[in-house]
Length: 316
Ligand code: BDR
Ligand code: CA
Image (tube, rainbow, N blue to C red; front, side, top):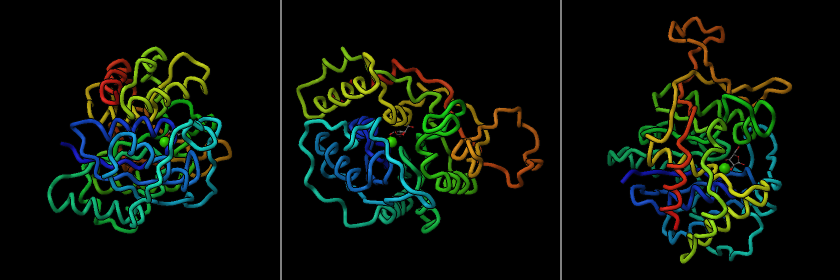
């Protein structure tokens, strides 16, 4: 089994990712950490515990992390996820409490354990990277327990929060810049599951309506129905769930290695992931910006049908 940790701002599509990670037999979900993003942190924690309850995984430790980005206010997205982040569904909310440790301490403990046992962890950030940046700055030694980081964030093409920037990176650009730079320096492999593929793993409404018979399948159906309603469409993407599919089944994803930088200024471009698609195979030391940028496997295409089938087979 592959040890994984998800960092989430649950979120309808984070919920799709959680159901998959919690139920897939090849994944060992060590922990889930929460950060403010799609909704405020308190609601993210409740939503995350609720989804893990539905998945039959109350055993997974959930850590409460950063409420706010490093430098700017949090800007939530009720138009995408509903006022409560889970589509305001009529669904019983968890009354459990999270782990007593802060998310950063929970991450540190799980990663140090991974380093000790040799079971290196795949970290899957699906939200603003505030917790991850704080971890790498506070406990850099914990990086020894990381096998790779597969993150949902950024775009080589158009953004969504702005024309330039994707929501997760736009919410906390400094945290993303710290995370990418630290991973680059430490040699931790990075995969960017960005907007270039994010919308391409689609569950048709008919497929969703056929789900049922368990709490997990029932919630999965309601999540897709709600996303379809919000997008005024007869189906919906599993969004963040695709990044978990990419960890389970990397063959379904096409990636290319490119240097990636996060834009930290600019009137209209702050939070953009600047993916350098030039032929850069030459000398990176001539980089006009100084230090060599982190090289990231950027997702350029996805087999959407393959990942949709993987998700349906796991959550039902
Ligand atoms: C990302 O932002 C959030 O709305 C989603 O949960 C996803 O992680 C897409 O830009
Ligand atoms: Ca998310």
